[in-house]
Image (cartoon, rainbow, N blue to C red; front, side):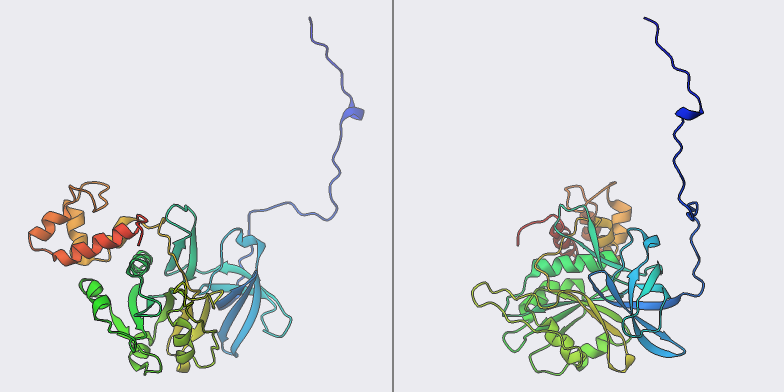
Length: 334
């Protein structure tokens, strides 16, 4: 059967009326040459506390993300460009229109199967892993994971062992001796001169299990920080989360920054590639490049690092430590 056709005239054409005053869309974004550079020091429910230091002095500004940033996340430690009201007066709000390139990103995932990584802090150069020697007991597997995150981010790790007045640090330090990680041991009410020296002139992120004394350290290092301090549950042996978000604090005298982060009970590493961890071991990285088969995870039977160590290019303890860190990526139970 022949298909029926219909003749159309102008009365059949539906014209969608345009909106008055609307501008055509464009991919061109304003350059914001007059934007003010600031440091993000805190994030709270879509509002960003930013510190501006310029010729007129130092001031804190509250800002929001501009729509043009899209889905880019803004985190503590970011250097950003601000426009709008940048006076810092009460009830004013600026806009973050640009995130400057990051020198480092500390990341984690919810667990080892989660494909979505979360940036915790940007532009820090040192990761201070805070662990209590007792009350609560130290968790070497969690420390291992945080070391892996530091190596992946290109940050220098630092072990900060607290509550040495309760027990000796010897057994825990023995585990990390082959890694050559710098460490400092503190006790409740003790002097923090050695720790201050290790923090001087650097941007340091503090991470650790809840209840290890991280907030106590922050309050001692920055007396006006007023971070809440938790107590360890006598039944579970776990601390209570007291810091709900990351906070950047300048050390007295302007000699560096510390960034306090919420206490964690897990540290997912789904985003970490084995080669990023190996690169932190200079004496083993060369052997991995020369002798390991393609896509070697350094845990397999034909890993070339075994012959590299056997030939005396590196110590067995170093290889054992590397493999322990790599296994921590596999989600093995503690």
